[in-house]
Image 1 (cartoon, rainbow over the protein chains, first blue to last red):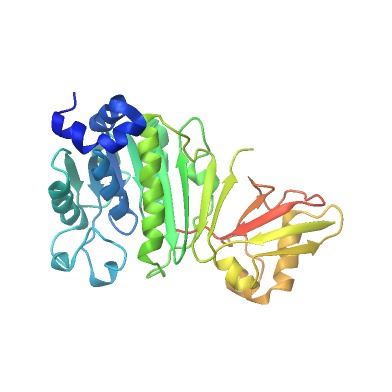
Image 2 (image 1 turned 45 degrees about the vertical axis):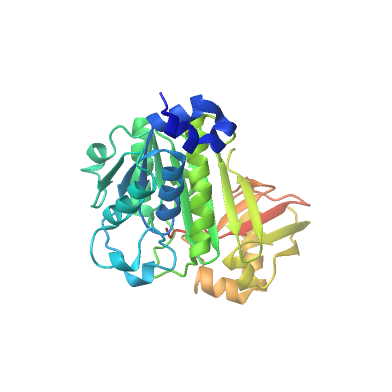
Length: 232
Length: 89
């Protein structure tokens, strides 16, 4: 059941997917893995939509993060791990939702315990080693995984649905080389993260088409949005 | 045969173009097209492939809107897109 306050708060989106859709969001729990450039807009917009969250990251916010990681502020630098820094703000933003945190690194040993009772996983990571781990876990449990990645003015999004789409490892069999201090603009992470958040809402409400077996390639430098078919 | 090649993201900067047409002999594969692109664009070759051919090069390819492998055979009029996978978050 939705409260009177919730009916008013979510009125504009209930006009899209109905009270039933909003109830589905209220019942759901989404893991945001990586609370940085992508994780900030993903967590922010999912919180706005009324989705319960599990925030995962092991790092503390640093000054050079702030051009893109908009859930972390100057007051947070070097203090609390990113999930804690983000939780405080999101709880003040939307007190209806429940926000859990895990301030540590996901490993083969802890992933089953950390990601239990999750409906959708959002990949906001900065490396393919942990992405492959999420991919394997998503397939083991049959949970959708929304992949996003960014660099400079560019980014990509695809939604992995176990049993229906290719796995992340099939799409990217060779991990792109991890770059320390890769160039990135906050607005790029904002665009890609926001698209990821929309993918999650579509998955949870069952409305619309997700990027299943489709890779969206965004080039903001040259204003292009290209969808590549991954089937076949 | 003539292939239309489209470059995305960083590849567009390395080749200095968003799109071009490339002539190839009949029966050419995606791999042959890549070789031709390396000849035409030394900056692309140096940055992405280094000194020698590198199977681990960070290049994703689509042919006529579908994901393609290096071994796929090309046909006249194909549209091939090259894009670098991104990995940051």
